[in-house]
Image (tube, rainbow, N blue to C red; front, side):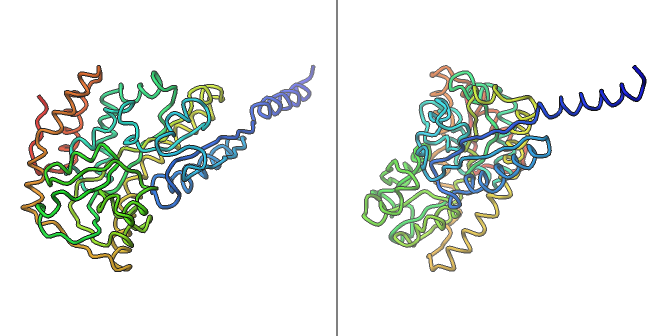
Length: 353
């Protein structure tokens, strides 16, 4: 066989091999929250989905997504399970709606008045996940999922149907929240009510509760300012408590290059989340002013007192997690150290025994 013929045959073989690895993939992706009102969902639709398609195309693959947001495929408290059983290939959800299964992953909620900046908060949370591998491993070992990336909520404040001047004015007032943040209300003597964003507008309108622990992006996006126009800036903190996960069986069925693309884009989705959330916090506050919401700021003295009243809360939650066989104390200690490393100073000295 001469050199020319060998070269041609080798080239044909290489092209054939390359073509054999080009595949078409379809992924069902969804969330219980709607796009674009929930920032983490908007970033799934506007960043993660197109970026995966772009990188897959560059690798010779074709990817299509069947997108189901706003509960079209799974509700806010069903997404983890829907990914686990394969109804969704990829799901985005707030860990707050899995208080039993993902109890410890809610650790940012257990240290209120933390970083106000979402990028700082995400830096501290990522450092905690990296330092305590159990957090990532649990998605796989117990729920058959691969953690692709984290996201969050921007800085939490409080909206109410009626005006109030002092923390004492909130005594007996029914206030809605996601669940892990409801203990924040104990100091004020408010009545906590478990709820979800999709239920908020009607519940505020009909008096099921008269306030919402909520960040500006969603308070504006869900138009809560209409039934509940009084918005008080408290600064409970930005909360990186949203996860983007993929069914492990589906992930394992993919070729290595496609797996790497999903992992890389998932981390990129996480990396851009801080700036995205900060932008929506700023835009949300501006938008609330434009639509006539009454915005004020809680005096620093009252905020400090509120924080001090919750000084034992992180340790309480850490010990609860320890009792459930989870590394609660390790995670909370690691997170508080990571927060300090960002340069942010907590208004109260949380001590984990």
